[in-house]
Length: 264
Image (cartoon, rainbow, N blue to C red; front, side, top):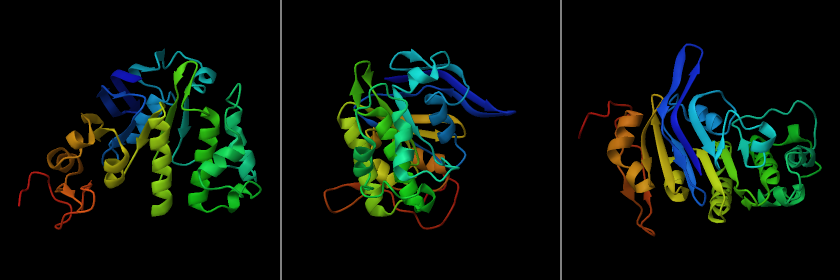
């Protein structure tokens, strides 16, 4: 489990996160949503131990801030928004970088590439890939790092920062399905998401940020509702249900960007 108490982050003179009480459980995909600048990526980086913070964060009982990075690497892997590769590595070489964090690799680089739909691309140079292919290559790298969703020391965690931002709709569904299956198999997934409809479809828990504060966390039904979303995004949103299978979605309302207090 991941738990925070009084988590705050300052970047220079600005308080980016303030007094965050966040939790994520293995067996579920926890989505972090909110408007631009609300602190989503900062929260993910703090949770993964990649950013200094005040307060407390525990991952599988380990206190972040005092746990060595090599030890954290056995429990969690991080897919950042942008991971530049400065050398002409092949796709296979990039994925194998993830294996260096595993004492006993449980997943080969080739198996990880197949899971993200890049089987047969191992010999290509990474810089020659499209943006979406590069994103999936890095996802294969973090999958190779973790191996199985669970291990001798408990659940393993995927931290994903906008994992489908460069992908077409088919690959978005593939990646989100992969993340959901990782969680269903006992691992934990924490993902920064912009697409609220994909969030509604795949997340088991949702944390809503606004202005550096956690305004609500709970099930998708509790968080992805008209009032909290409209207040956070400062525009009018209304939950709807699709006629097929009753799945719900959030269409953009007419009228553009308006204060949330306006009612029709």
